Amino acid sequence: MRTSGSTAAGRWLDARLVAPEAERGERIVCYAAAAGGAVFAVALALRSHYAWLPLVVVAVVAFDLFGGTVVNATRSAKRRFHRPGRTSRHHFAFVAAHVQPFALALLVPGFGWGPAGVVYVLTLVGAAVTLAVPSDLRRPVAFAVSALVIAAVTTSLTVPQELAWFAPVLVIKLLLAHLLPEDAAR
Image (cartoon, rainbow, N blue to C red; front, side, top):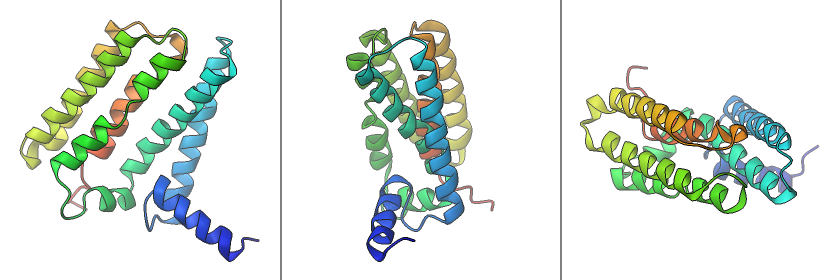
């Protein structure tokens, strides 16, 4: 049984990790995706015999990216990130704050600074292009630049096989799930 303190702590955590006023189903799917992604990524990393610190970094990054991809696609997060007063600057800053490529380069063997920089810059460029177009073109442009960025990084960069998931999931989280507002057609 949860006490009122744990309920308040749970709501506080949910508000930060998912979104304020997230529905129960949204929370379940978000945490399941985060945990599933972390388990998947760590299972892959274990095959490469990483030490404990790189394993922890991979787990945290995977939890954030897999979970964040789902979180950013929820209606609760769309209300939070696309509320009145939020501008393209806010959205671009959110993308720019995702420095996970550099954390991987710093702490995970085989994930170099070159690939980290390329993934980061291409994601920023994709965000800038997506945010620069008129709102009625934002969705198709976001998909176009996401497909191009994913194709470019997965065919042109050398990263450890166990981290091949990283750039595509980062791009989906930031360019497709985060930058696109809730579909007005609903």
